[in-house]
Length: 266
Image 1 (cartoon, rainbow, N blue to C red):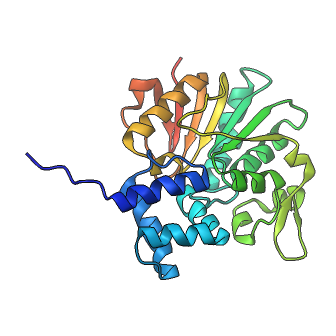
Image 2 (image 1 turned 120 degrees about the horizontal axis):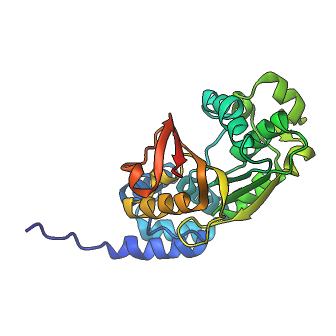
């Protein structure tokens, strides 16, 4: 029988300290992947060992923010995989609107807000007077606040948005960054959400959760995908990331609807 590897007490003490500092539970993150990401920060800062890293984080707010961003994967852009958003605009949302007039959307793990704002653009183009609901959530409060502000976006984060929509929904700032219009901001409700412990919205038509679940353990993934299945109404759509797949999706009430798309079975 293979002997179990004893836990590293220095790592465990560091992880507990980091959880308190960033307010994000880390037990459900893949440990090897988490350590690799943290090691890259340690290498850049010439920090040797978990105790030294803990002391450095306690003394440096900028380092704490760097670590938080590294672990919560706050990398995003508007219209990421543009063909998928065109599919939403041309096919799926019109199909959903044919069934009911007011739709409910949830952007889970919304990071800096690119995906809920992308969704808001699409809805405004299709049904500008519709009273649709878009809730956008993330566990990282500073990043969520940035999403709520809707400004400071880099040109690289806006590059995939069709030019007419950039002109209509963005304002270029003096620094060369972009902010979204107030009209777009009013369409979205931002709030903090822990996908592993907080209750999910219900009776949803569409959930966007892209390149988030991939970083969790298998047990955490199962919890999240089961929660999504229960949160969607029959016929509702789950939109996941380009490198993600739900294994045995039919076991939890989904069927594949195309690339990165799953339908909640009736």
